[in-house]
Image (cartoon, rainbow, N blue to C red):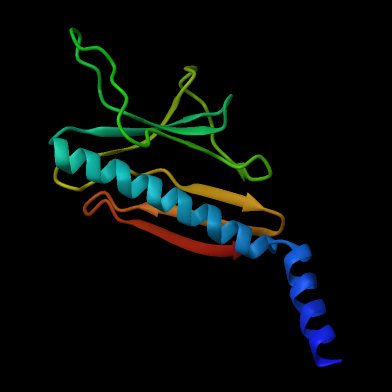
Length: 143
C-alpha cells in the first residue's frame, strides 16, 4: 500500500506540471541571466551594450552601438526568446522594429529608467534597473 501511494504521489507531481508561480520564477531567472550576460559583455569589451525588444519575434536582443565602418557580429547568447504565454507591456513610440529598453556601460552602470513588467496568469514581476550600479531589482505583485 505504501509503495502504491508513493508512486501515485510522484506520478501526480510529474503530470501536474509547473505551477504558474514557478513558471514566472523560471522565466524571471532566465531574463536576469540574459541581462547579466549583456552587462558582462559591456564590462569585458569596454563598450556599451544595448538590450532591445523585438516585439514581432518576442525576443530580447543584445546589440552593440554600430560604428559606421563596422559589420555586426554575433556574440554568445545575443538573443533570448520571451515565452509565448507571458506578456510584457511596452510602448513603441520610436516607430522602429526594435525597442531599446536600456544600455549597459563599461563601468557596469546602466541607462535603465524604464520599468518592465512580466505578466503570467495573475502573477507579475516588475523590474527596474539601477543607473548607478546596473543592478536589476525585482518586485513581485499580483493583479
